[in-house]
Length: 68
Image 1 (cartoon, rainbow, N blue to C red):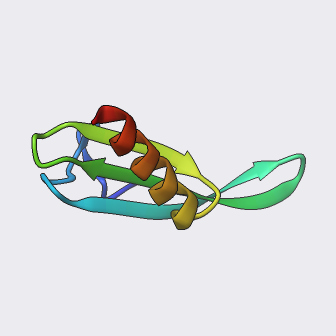
Image 2 (image 1 turned 45 degrees about the vertical axis):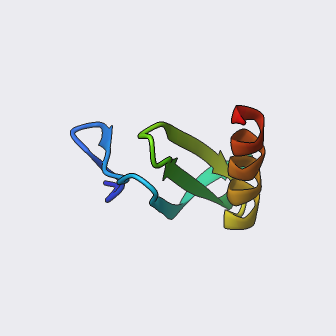
């Protein structure tokens, strides 16, 4: 169970980011992934899953740039 959601709804507050690392299997190998949420000051939620936190934040920055 994730700490990032409650009853299926993100608990990320405005201006906050949250992330968790989880593991899954692919072709018999255990791989780690990062689940990442970011909520803007105006309340819009960005969510992504990527191999690293750095990649998640890079995707968030790209999303923010496109929004402007």
